[in-house]
Length: 365
Figure 1 (cartoon, rainbow, N blue to C red):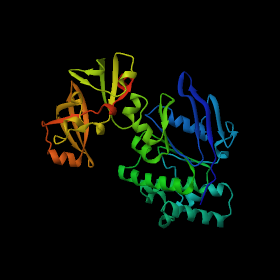
Figure 2: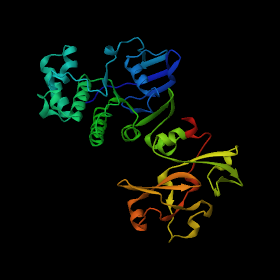
Figure 3: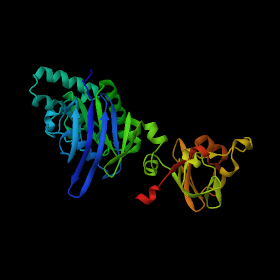
């Protein structure tokens, strides 16, 4: 079952609520069949932008263009966009079958075709055996599947989802994440997904648009935004980073008593240098390896302050020049060195693993 899907373009979209600028100068092209996530903290403008696309909110400036036509004045019901909200918004007095059929009845589809379409959707979302049940008889995850099925039943050209999984527990969220991704790939439908959960965005999206203070600060594949964060805010918000503030000194970055070699430092023309490094990019020094494998300036000995077992990785907190930092060890590394609290360990900060920024995220909060 394929759903026709066409290009959606946002041109210079801004939204003002009095003196508050909720969305600022957003330009974005969403390709047919693309899965894009708007990711950002609360109040960053992502839901407002979604509501502008649906037509529930009118932008202050700019155009929403779909299939080459400006749809600013088209009411939500005429945009043929499906919408799934955080609250399931199911009709409690209707069965699962009736809830999914509701939009089709409003479009006056013949009852035989409605039944065919609903049965197709029930199979698609894995609820065929629950067709005669009422929402109160379903789990939260099942109710959200019904809401998803209801939105898909009308064969929308674009499906918009506003934090649809945030009310569910972690395991159900992961399971439904898989359902949503699979449906999107099978249907070839354009999906726009709003979330503040960076793990959710990275797992689902073809592209992630990271928003802050009403603006899109970076857009790219999950790999790009994680591996090459453009700002220190993104380095912290998407994943976790350790931050270092140092001074340029003799071609290195002086941090307390340490002097780190940092790749591309020659491109920085200011004295103060802000660095970020991911916990998983700090390496445990292999004592059996050749000394030539490590730059001596970037090897430090630290003490394990806190050890958190996280399953696939073990997160170790340590203090470096008065700053609390973390390193992620693999389970095998952790088992090999039999690490305990207050034990010493040698860590290597690879020069190429540092990101250099012009500001420090913690100063922007």
